[in-house]
Image (cartoon, rainbow, N blue to C red; front, side):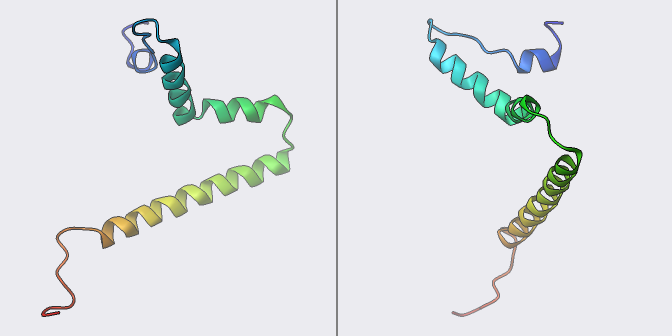
Length: 87
């Protein structure tokens, strides 16, 4: 179990007894994985209609963010030729 990549990737080592820094690293890892939001959501009952709305909103947000990232990467590419030559 200890050699499994998912386990090793989520192991936080305390260096020199500095627990506060390790706690911050652990919170950052949990936030990136979405564990904190899942715990907050499961604290109270969520009606099925609200859950559908939330899932639909999250899906739309993922699509929007992916599309905007694609557009920004397209505009910010370095191999683009200069549209205004001589200016």
